[in-house]
Amino acid sequence: MAERILVHVPADLADLIPDYLEWRRRDLQALHAALANDDLETVQKIGHRIKGTGASYGFPPLTEWGRALEMAARAGQRDAVERSLAELTDYLERVEIVEDTEPSG
Amino acid sequence: MSILIVDDSEDSQILLQTILKRGGYINLRVAGSAQAAFELLRLDDESEDSSVEVDLILMDFQMEGMNGIEACRHLKRNPRLRDIPIIMVTASDNEENLHEAFAAGAIDYIHKPIRRVELLARVGAELKFKHEMDQRKARERELLEVKRQLEEANTILHRLSFIDGLTGIANRRRFDEFIEIEWKRAARERIPVAVVMMDLDHFKRYNDTLGHEAGDQILRRVGSALNAALRRPTDLAARYGGEEFIVALPNADEEGARVQAERLHEAIADLRIPHPDSVVGAFLTVSAGAASAIPPIGDSSPAALLAAADRAMYEAKRQGRNRVSLCAVEFEVHDSD
Image (cartoon, rainbow over all chains, first blue to last red; front, side):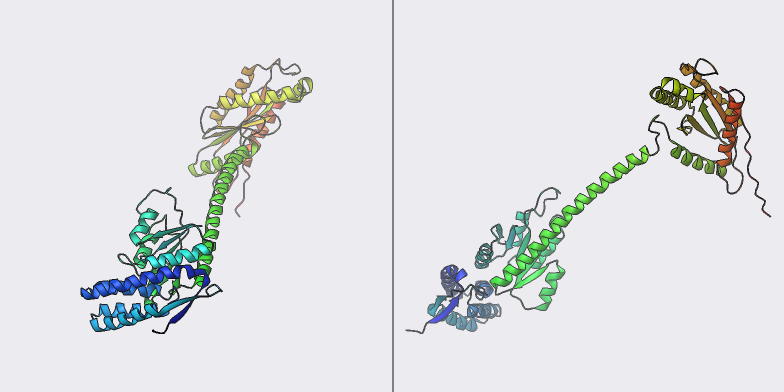
């Protein structure tokens, strides 16, 4: 079994995180579907959305992959999109949240 | 205090709402696009009285459709909405973009990733500022209203300060100002100006016999009668002292002054106010002195004119009262050498 990635999230936002991650997993399906249809515009949009929220919710790597997806899709680099999508999928499969007792900074 | 969140990402909306709500801001509104925000704020509603219940806007920088900067520009062009502070929320590090945001009228910006403490601190600061601005504006409106009331009161006071409290006609202050202006006008236009000075005959005896109350009543009737006897709208009747009255007659020569003085004298006689202790007759009478002059060339004051009318009035008294007398005006000759 793949190693888990533990992410600490602030207690005052912890209740938002499961939903947030669930929506990102649905993004994965949408991204795969878009890629299958060669719809890089949708990839770009979803990438942009993930970029805009990942770090704010406590997941800086999500913002990075969001940025990578957005840029690769805009540049029409299918290979790069596939690579980032694979990494993003792996991350979302392994990530687990640990609730901090202190509120976020 | 109400905050409007403008963001096209549902995840961002949820996050911002959650942080703000838990920070104590419960009055939140959300728009998923610039257009939705405009509709919520009724941007196109021109009427002045459509109230805006939003105290702060959190505007996402990059949105589908119209972006945050353009939306900011639109809001700042609307007089009704331009005072709502706008904080831009941006993931961009591009200095150019920040510059653009401020140029468009944003008051501050918050960087993504959103940090709770930073968001609450900036929102708190802007709302406090907005609150203070609103209060100041309200105070300014109050001050303007007070100023308006003061001006109104001043106008009334000004008018009152020119009216003799007992008789309701002009007072001496008003007369002095009036004759000064008319004298200057006469000097410019080379036309005469006249005054008639009048004193009630044996008024002290009337007062002593019938009491001050009755005396005051007489003064009021005399004032009204003199005022009513004026022939031209430019003439002015005033109470000059205790039982002394004066009338200014712009553009009246000596003959005109004499005729008007006779008319005023007659107006008082026509009142037929019984005077139980007058040596002159059974009714109240006046002694009147008239004078008229064309102001001399150069600097001069109406003092000589008033002195002449005064002399004429005493001459009328001396001759037995209840009559009109005229006196020539003597100007002091200034030797220019």
